[in-house]
Image (tube, rainbow, N blue to C red; front, side):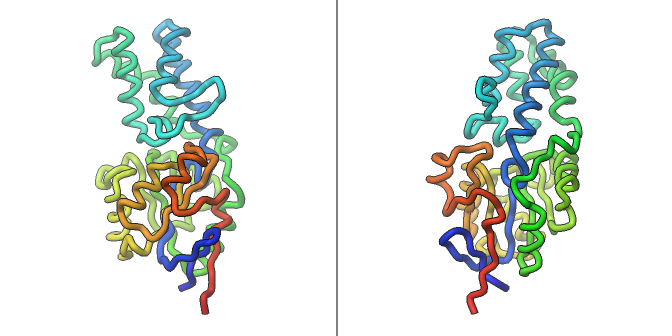
Length: 254
């Protein structure tokens, strides 16, 4: 088994775990437009296209002025079910009874956020397929851990031609698995694949990904700026930063 070279760091590992949004595919090209359209549909149903939409953006962590998602915000890191609860809370504060707020989110916001994307919405961050094939051919085992729902995840992996390259995929709506950033996600993967967490590398675009890896005791936490978190935020949490997963290279130490 080769070692993994990431920047100036070399580590001995068996499994590389990838986040999806912001790591394998462009986060902002997908989730920003989704948030805008979802908020628009919800506000239209409620007859408000002013302060309410601004409050929805603020609570989700979406900066619509710059079309960016704020670091460590619900839109950046939370499973969809949690984001829907946040949106319901905004409607409750706006004046709707809680049950009615939940119903409006379920009827108008959720279908847009949860809809299967068009292939053109999925933009890989670099030559992802070839990078994964190179790592797999070198003997590294590969997995995905994401807060996104399974149907959206499977669609995205199919679109970039990566489905068959991963041994295991953990999603935010899996009922038998803790959700990221719980370090038990990596422990679960270890149990399924018979690999100690200490022989895993976690690759992600958020501080949450890095903290999960560090708390679980992973061999390396690799951060990708340009996703949901800034380079400044990732600097303090990651062991090493890369601009693309193409910078993860097998390294023969013999």
